[in-house]
Structures are given as C-alpha cells and as structure tokens.
Length: 281
Image (tube, rainbow, N blue to C red; front, side, top):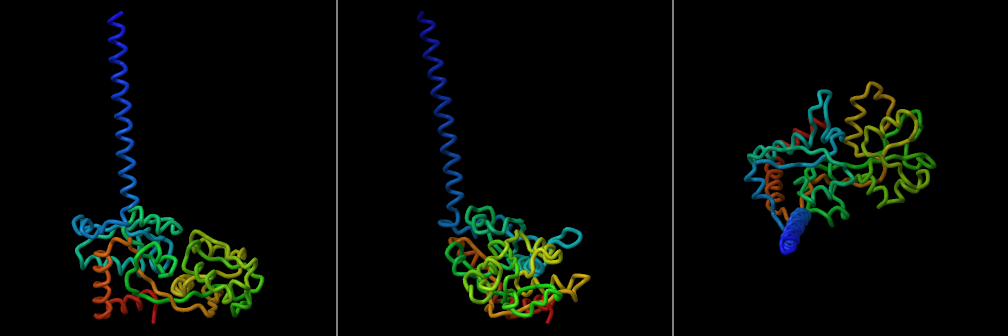
C-alpha cells in the first residue's frame, strides 16, 4: 500500500515537471515571436546588419524594369543595380527575398525582410506604417492599352475594364483621385492582379481593356515585345510620384546610411547613368 502511494506521488511529481516544462517552453516561444513582431517599433537593426554584412530586401521579382528575372532566372533591373551599388560601398551583401507585394509592410515590420526596395512609391498611407528613404527616382502612372481598342484618353475608358496590381501605388492613386480615371471605368473599380505580367497576358487576350501601371514599367515592357507597335500608352492627370526605400520606423541608422549613399551617387552622376541604361533618354 505504501509502495503504491509512493508510486502515485512520484508519477504526480513527474507529471507536474512535464507540465511546467511545456508551459515554460510555450511562454518562451510566445515571447520570442512577440519580440520579433515588435522589431520595427523598438530596435535599430543597422548595427546587426553591419555586423552580419548582409541585408535582406523584399521585392516583387516580376516588376520590370525595377527588379525582375531575366531569361536565365537571374535577378536584374534598375533597383537591383542601385541597391547592390549602395550596399557594396557600405561593405554589405544584398539578399533578395521575393514577397507577396500586398503583404510587403507586414513582411518588413515582422522582421522577415530589412527593407522594401522595388519601385516602392511614397504615399501617405504607407508613411503610417514605415519610414522612407529620400526619393531616388520619379515616375507617373499611365494606362497601357492596345491600339485596336481606340482608347486615346482616360475618358475613352468609359465603361471599359481597367486592371492594376493589388496594393500598388497605381491602385492607391486610382482610388485617391477618382475623378481622374476611376469615374470612367466599368463598375468604378479596377480588376486587381498579383503581378503585372499576368495582367498583360489578359490585356493581349482581350479580357481587359487597359492596364494602369507606372510609365517606366510600361515603356520597358512594350519595348521588349515582338508586337510592340500594337500597344499604346495613354497619359492623364496623375502627378509624378517618388520612388523610395521602405524601412522599419526604428531603423534610423539604416535609413541614414542609404540616404548618404543616394546623395553621393546622385552628385557623381551614377544614378543618372543608371536611369539612361534602364529607362532610356
């Protein structure tokens, strides 16, 4: 009887130890994940990035000519060249991380990437979530259509199907300034695509009538098509916008370092030469 009681007591103690162990591990994982989620709010990660000599940058790897894959699968583009040069001068290697563009700020603020750099336009809405670098390039939004659609102005999109990229600067402009284009299009709403290449496929197939996209993308894409003469770029009254790099609010050291490099590369003409390489004269 005593032996049985002793056995019960021992088993109870073992059970309690296991239970406390599970709770302790669970709390540890919770705190770790919680701290990771708060990385952007409290920490300046620049010392870590300098120490590791590596930075992870998020991008949409289909966004020509800013950051995309060539026929061999290699990442190329204006932003690829620029970021590589900026961090080369700082002794830091760039690790490019393709992401869901609609989740870019979340990816940044949870610490999965250290910066958003891929034709990322400064907007008031985005400024609430992230910090911006200085502007390094300016562009406007245009509508790409097929000449056979006979669309020569935004007003000609009346009742027509317009597409854009989900959570893109073009989509933000469309909704922020509805009297420029949105009021004309079918259902006063654009069809959203994850990537522009899919939207261009549907434009060619006649499933949409126009595609809202920044002018750099439009001109580069069209110039590399066998049927380039079939396309038309239609301009409206959208204003010029600024391309910037997105940082976590706490990463003031990283922000300062990149801005200093931009100033240097603008003064010596390096960025101007890069614009000619990717966007033409």
